[in-house]
Image 1: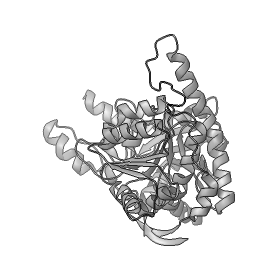
Image 2: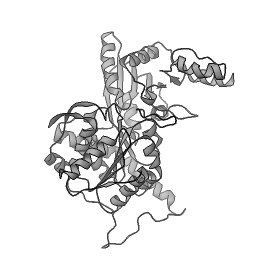
Image 3: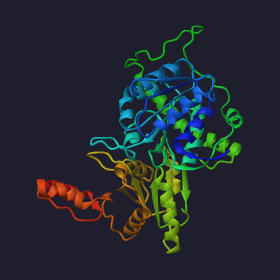
Image 4: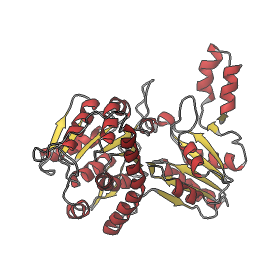
Length: 414
């Protein structure tokens, strides 16, 4: 059914269609509207047989999610930014116990300083937590991916983060195609937990594991991650065949055939990039977009296939690793080991700084002109803001325009 609604409401309707048995909620912007709307559905009877639990913190939300999942209930929660960090201990426990929890991460910058706007520093901080991480390009993608996430989580036996850009998607109103309840019921089926606590068959879940078996536990967890790539593809194909949707999957290529340059992007920036790439194509500039949907597990073979023989790749990243460099770029380099391909990171859009079509245009033209001479470049630095501090405090002045890593390092040495 087509509806002109807010992205958060669309996600809330999608979650309700999946008939979760427990939803644990603690508000933190920009995910609050999602759990608020799910709560309304429980109260007005739209979502039946669901316990909606208001908890006192994000740590409590994940603790309740773990308990309800262990108890055999289909479980959902949502968070963002500092809330995600407050959950971290429980996040690792949920994946280590193999619990098929689905959680929305309405991606938002991590403070300090406090910033409530979008980038990917929160979700990517949990990249080693053992959760699947699926990134959404649009609100339609978010609606469909949440429904698929429950089936993926339950088939693989691992929890799933559905990462959608805070405010950019969560608070945007657009036309969404919301599936009918009968369609989702047919797709998901009745929830049948594989491992759960029951007095009929007493077991321990979460007991201590010593050195004699801990490595094997981690091996099996990694094995599930390896299996997940195939499951994501299978579930996506099943959902698309049932609904006619084009959402989900591991990655999507746009205008990649015979492209001179390919840009790898996650999240809502993909839409902006596609529009600008269409304009550049009219100028005779052929650039491809690889929309990376699954960051964990990372699809090394699919990424290598998507890049193909292209000699130049830019990873447009909305987060980075302090004291190191990019986060996506090292994974892409692993995928392309032994191949002649120049792969670089360009950081832009931190803390909600908008990435416009002109931003994409500038990145493309600078890349094709050979101006990105270093592996890591800060593209949208405001030199006036930067120099307002460094010139007075340190006597250091930075030039306008993109700044490579060597400029930063030289300024420290100097």
